[in-house]
Image 1: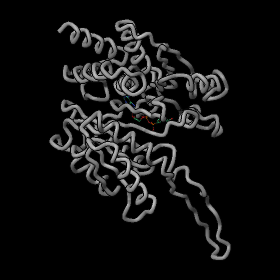
Image 2: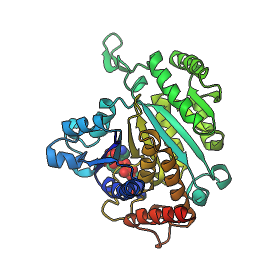
Image 3: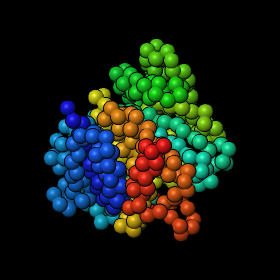
Length: 363
Ligand code: NAD
């Protein structure tokens, strides 16, 4: 059966960067007879304006039937005062929940040509290439009970959350971590706080158990505070990191900061049937929307992740990644990556990348 992709450009630069990814998608589809079934629908503030909701039932139903969802970005100041359930960002949370996207994959990499854009020394950061696998639907962000209460005896308020993981939740995210490591350099570092938290001690035991099924992957453990420090001191020691929702949230933002521009970083959120939502790590950037200066690379690499993880086209993913690498090597820079005026506009990036694909094919 043909693979299907639902494209949700969203708001602000989400629309511009999605346009670039679509240009590439349509061309690859044509060139390699992929017979992909591509649909485009509204989401976020744009959907609110057209249909009165940031995420319509039609989009949810279509998303459930699609193999991959390409999601641009949502949000903008014009919708900031809407009631909570009408705000554009609810679309993201709604899709994650409806599709049970429990595994968030965030690569962090830095091409050596862009090392100067990082706040870290070039020798520490050049050629960084790691992947953070974050559990996305459990842990302390969702654990019950939770609340803010008043203690009448002591006459003061208090607040509490519950950090809880079930065995099956740890097993399934650990499996994703091991499988990702198998496709890379076969090293997995599991991050926890097993020295102080029962839930982390349990996490560590289950990850150890799952490791028996992956003898080719070298498993290590690090405490979350140390991992945060190591990411800054010596990030290149890592290949794949697997972590809970809370620690993964913090570590993936540190890793993203290492990489220079947020406009370069893709992400994937997967469920247990390899169905996935693919999106850049950045938001809708209202400050640069419609100026044709957004960097579409994060979105193009999100498409590449969709090829790899949901569309069974890993070779095409590698080819597209190589084209992006070559694009940077050749010196092309979007506005966020250079101080001079000689930058490439958003709507010119896709055609340059396709030119590079031609060069590879003719080699
Ligand atoms: P943002 O990521 O949109 O922008 C942060 C900064 O990075 C801005 O200066 C922006 O110009 C720059 N930037 C972001 N992407 C870029 C790109 N591809 N190329 C060049 N520069 C880029 O974050 P924000 O400003 O905090 O949020 C803006 C809106 O986006 C808000 O409404 C927020 O809720 C929403 N948001 C959406 C998502 C999502 O859809 N996944 C994620 C984060 C924020």
